[in-house]
Image (cartoon, rainbow, N blue to C red; front, side):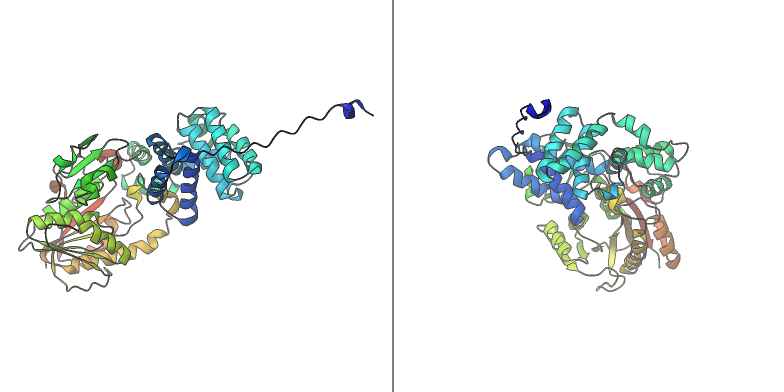
Length: 475
């Protein structure tokens, strides 16, 4: 008998049940919903957090748990492209061959290692434990091996390795460093006129957590009332805007719960205010919001119209979104009507309205701070479907307004193919129109460009990248 065979065998390690971490499990569930169901994090995360707060025992969330879960979800989604490049350098197969749930866990771990102040050992061990719970022991070992490679350098060090030099490929360099698809970098850069400092500032602003901004709906609430809330400060540009400090919960504000105020980016408020204040000739009694869902701009417009004795018709094609509009307008102090109708085949007669807002469906590239997953979901070919629709809706708006009235064409995208190109093409077919300089209608807002249209920017104005062109019908 050999010496080795005479040695006593080591007792097998007892099985250790994986430790459940409710915060990271919730973050993983949110990422899976975004990936599997094309859901949006800003719609998926709140009900998950609400359910976690209602639980009893160790799985009940407190404010710190909710804040960490939110950071893990949004941070991972914002920097997904960068983390993919880093993870790709640490695995021995193409990323497309890594199971999506495994990649979600790896991305969560990469964000903790490279994008937060969580200590390295804690980030790795917590993510491996998550993998054991949601993936099993076998794949947890793979996660552990990959994350230990990721942990060998910090974010700056990894960017030097995985991002091509700026001088060799500036667009791809910016895409990897700032976690935007290359085509989005190119489109935004064109919209900024090729300014390098501007594009880097914009891409970085897209990766910052946006403030929560409230709107006090005139006749129902005031900014002064909202400012009495804890950690509330005035908006920058809109007289109806109030910003909540980090961690502020809109649902805790009484006026929001009652529908007298709402959550609305200042860029959207400015679009509505500019249209409402544009000079027109003749009566000012009938207003139209032709793409009203989900109702934020319609609620502000209806309140402004009510102050002047005017009425708003809010039209939305999708019935369920029309229901959201009706909810947003409920309690408006003046007359209004909400209908479900296709804006390209309107049920109203031509020349009916004095003011028309057409905030058209778009790629949403102006709201990447709020919907970070949209940057990875959108494709350049989406413009092929959106461009004809945008032109049809603008033509409808111009047909719907009377002579002397004003149309506001708006998008939550700065892409030139969705903004100036649409306006220029449609106005060629409607010669009896003129562009109004929108800049004087936003008197407190700086850096509005050469006009007459207006493009807002996250890095310059702290708003979503809303675009607005105001058009008067002259004949």
